[in-house]
Picture (spheres, rainbow, N blue to C red):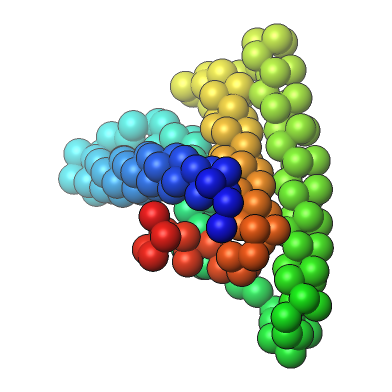
Length: 176
């Protein structure tokens, strides 16, 4: 394996760990917010008025910041009908093609997410809810998550091209 592929995989391992920590914090905050809302409504007849909106933003944070770590740990659903039957060079080429297609899709998504967040920031767009949250914040989190996924896919491609195989989880436990 090349030093570049190893360095890239190590950097992505650290970034994925940080993203997963933030995603985990979002899950805890979402749980706390819903608990406060339920207890407030049930026992005190009051509402935070923001639980649904902030819970949605926390869910977006959890989802998008969890994409790259999920790919790294091999957690995405994959249909292996043809890939499992391929061996050697054919499998390596198939793996590279799959990752290149994923990079193309993710790069397109990322481009539009950054554009959406930039437009919301430029126009001062806010939510229609009570909190009037600037929409560039959750949209920016989506863009950051997609960028992390794109970076992880590029690191994954470097490993595939270096002959390490297509399993990103292999770089987290044995080589690094």
